[in-house]
Amino acid sequence: MRDVTLVPLLLLASAGWLLAPAHAASATGRTVASGDRPRRDQHHAACSVDLTEDLAEKEPLILQKQCTKNVCSWKLSEGDEDQLNFERGEEVLIACPDKNNELQGFASQTKSVVAVCSDKPDSSFKVNGEAFTIKGFECERIPKGEIMTKNVACGHRNAELMELGFTVRDQWYSLIKVCHVKARSETLFTEHILQGETTKKRRIAKRPSFEEGGCGCYQGFSANDAYKNVNKTLREVTGSSKFPSSISSNIDRGHLAPDGDFPITPYRYATYFYVNAVPMWSVINRGNWVALEDKIRKLARDLATDLHIATGVFRVMDLPDRNGNLQELFLYRSSNRKQIPVPKFLWKVVYDEKSKKGIAFVVLNDPFPKAIDSDDELCPNICKESGWNDNRWRRISRGYLYCCEVKELKKFVPYVPKYDVKSVLNGSD
Image 1 (cartoon, one colour):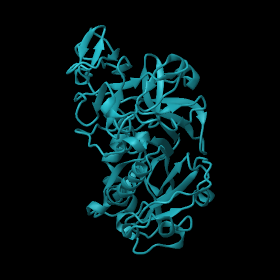
Image 2: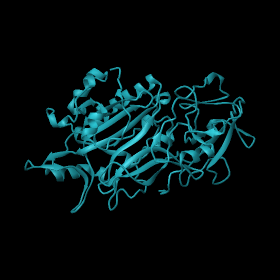
Image 3: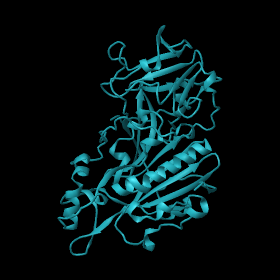
Image 4: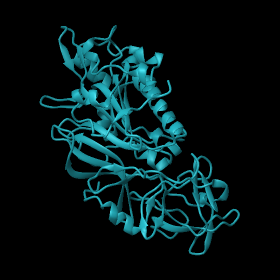
């Protein structure tokens, strides 16, 4: 894991290289959107790359150079949902970051090359005069990225800012912000940008395993073992040898920033770090939680705009033991430590910077109650009047879900990131 200061945005701009899906980070560490992007007609592009068909199986990271009056900024390549389009003569940086990774078919230890769009049939790009199709650029393995600690406070309770992203040619490119409390091995929230022009759902052929990433977030125990042994831990906490007894009692590694919010496989792989996961009950993770993610992606597509997404947790879930005493749930317990809490609430804030509209969602991460108590609703439910109503939301066994104004959620969850929300972001039911 690297532990260095983030390169300020102006320095990235002077270098001239732009991460194709626009996720640059500012000098303060905040992920920033690219703003409005003029769409380039794919039928007139010299080199058009179909993200669903044209890339190699072990696809590389793609960075694009776009400059106006000697000022460069990171932007998504103009085009339709699943297209990257380039003009003739436009340069593209093809990279295979990560340790022990390199481009195949080039000199040993070649981690990146500059390719030029050439507009030639069956050989759209050239590297030092040699012709390549985009599929000819393949890594030894799909880049997964890394965790960078920022040495900056965030949230509360001794939380610190981290980022998930990639290092290319000694420069850092941020994809996801993470606010993590090492003392509890708990991520309070993540932040990322969902791009409206590239939200068509693509499946990963083979999902990678979650990794700790060398951040020092799980000292003295294994996060992987903690998740694997969750049934044993739950039986010990509840004092019941019969618990858990059904699929409703299984716990998933639930994504905060979901892989489906990113258009290219390396970016999706970068979501598979434990700091981007929290313990979610399987029926909730695969129920209303994924249904909510799909609805938000559809909204981004319909609006054709970038959305800021913050996703986090609040409070610790508890269950009664054999004596009826409530016990907080942690995946790892020792005589003096409790790590990786099972959250009682999951929340998600969606913010459209252009319109200054936003909305918050809360999911009860507990499939067992027979009815909802007043304490389970942190803020007034506005799903119906805001166009986000769905009959599925009321099913407790799938994750009871309700909608709130962002300011109302923030009254209960003080570490919800600040957004300049002026009104409610409506859905379309």
